[in-house]
Each structure stands twice: as C-alpha cells, then as structure tokens.
Length: 87
Image (cartoon, rainbow, N blue to C red; front, side):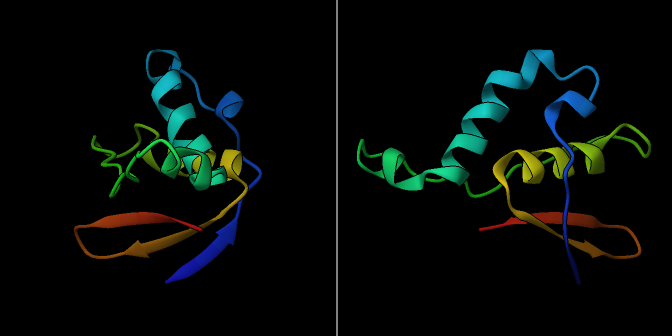
C-alpha cells in the first residue's frame, strides 16, 4: 500500500457537477464527523467508483482526499484497484 497527500480539488475534475452536492456532503462528513454524529447521522461505509479505465476514478478519489485535507491510500491488484481516504 502507498499513502500519499494530494492537492487535487473538485475544480480539477471535469463533469462532476451532477454529483457535486453529494460529494461535498461526504467531504464535510470527513472533515467534521462530530457535527453529523450530533444529529444521528451514520458515516458512509465507502464510496464505489465504477467505470472503465481512463474515466477519472483515481482523479476523483484524489479530489475527495484533497478537499477533505486527508491522505489517499492506494491498493492495487491484478484486477482490482481501490483507494481509501484516511482519517
């Protein structure tokens, strides 16, 4: 596994306007979980980024980590690549 810090933001990702509100809510939760816990919200268990190679899944994962001010942990395999935003 490799953990890296990214300065990528949502401004670096084209075509996310339809999903921007939901992604912003996830970033806000990562930044301030206590505010969400106080109203009974439960954390997301994860986000599945699905698509063919070259569609921007890694860039979007980097942007989520960058917006949240967190590190991104990449785990690669022969057929599976997954990323975790570290808290």
